[in-house]
Length: 232
Image 1 (spheres, rainbow, N blue to C red):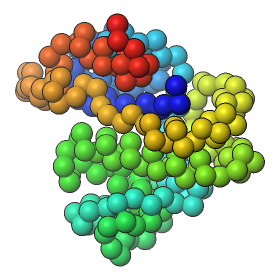
Image 2: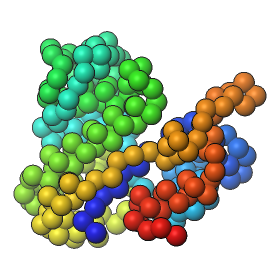
Image 3: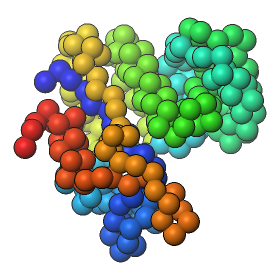
Image 4: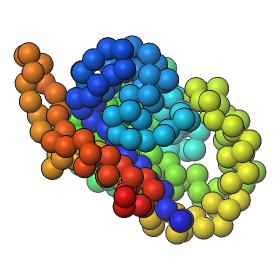
């Protein structure tokens, strides 16, 4: 379809985690790593995901640095957060401590981009997820401008920093075709969250905040439409 879909699931989304009952969706990974996280997403939202890529803090910083950094628009408040939190981020990601000198259109190194991804204090957790998607989009744009041999080298450099069950060679075979239509792909990236703020609302349950979908079937339909372009 020459489209790419990138969806965030809010971490406080109220779901049924197999074997653990109803709680926040981010608990699934804590309880059972990738397999339980995938099973939880599939069972609650009618999907059939089988593959995953997991990255930690250090991986995000390293990958951004490996592509030479990214260019992103940063507000004054976002710049202040990066400069405030970068020492903590650098310590926990083995990154550097360089602070931003200005806001606006700026060049971010890996530690700065990671700190930006972690920011939920300028805005909220939904805004943080949007920042994460924006950073991934910029990574896609940066990588797509490179030649095939450069991308293959980057893949070799990325792999030690990620955990995945994907058949890497299968996906490498898709790269030439993707590069052929890079303009179309980059122009057709769907970036959103499910459940959206219109599809769920914050509720206190037994003194704990949850983001509770109004109708799980509507959320399922949104996933199908955004991921596959189908209406069923």
